[in-house]
Amino acid sequence: MISILIPTYNYTVFALVENLQKQCERANVVYEILVLDDASTDKRSLKENSKINLLKQCSFQILDKNIGRSKIRNLLAVKATYDWLLFLDADTFPSSSEYIEKYLDAFSNKTSVIFGGIAYPKNDSKQYSLRYKYGIERESLSLAERIKNPYRSFITMGFAIKKEIFKTIKFNEKLAGYGYEDSVFGHELQKNNISLIHIDNAVVHLNLETNDDFIKKSQLALQNLLKFYNDGSVNSETVKILKIYLKLKKWNLRFAVKGFFNVFKHPILKNLNSPKPSLLLFDLYRLGYLSSLNPKDA
Image (cartoon, rainbow, N blue to C red):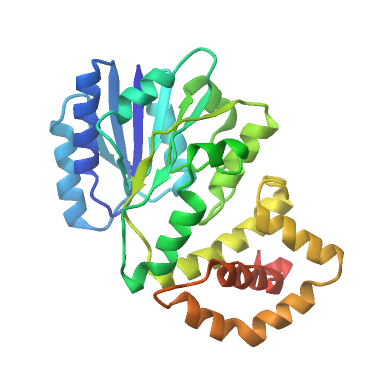
């Protein structure tokens, strides 16, 4: 038995739900697919998503007001009926027609959380070059690579978790804003000694941000990261850039990195907006931005 939970905002998910519903029917499993809309303003997506209610065992509801990324996922879990929860982001799609069956095969009394991985469709557009390269090299990891660091390579874009386990973890509603929710959730799993199983069953991430949007989101994420660290929601072993940043602070090198960032950020941004962006330069840009933040910025 499985509850598939999809939060959405200004995004059409009918094709995703229809695909999942057909897979569940073919697998002959007891299921439900719940979609919650976080008070979207896009009438086209609302109209298209309303067709979800015509599909067997599927539900689409619209919230009266926007409650944010964490609260809507927690609310979906409260509404869920069955013992296993499968969370999927709106802009994902199963990588195969056996996606649901592979998760069902992995469910057992000994497993608590299962992550199948992330994949990206080929994209040669200069406009999305940075987000695509980051996704391919940093997120779309093989099963063997993910197993080496199971909690660090965990991404909440698509994962299954027992409902009883989710009740003890949940998404942290105190931490608003974009970025590092994956690290926070993974840290909670590790801190509570909850086993995390990786399998080869990726979802495809479809909706890439433009280079400019991804850089801006990365900056917001770094502001969030400092909040998370100060709150105790992540540690240096959970996030690599945080580990480096804390070492720089310890060695009194943070201001030197801040100076480097102020001098070279524009040439670095030029590279990051090119057809062949460097992830090393992106790391330096993020580290410089993080070093330039004051406590009041976080």
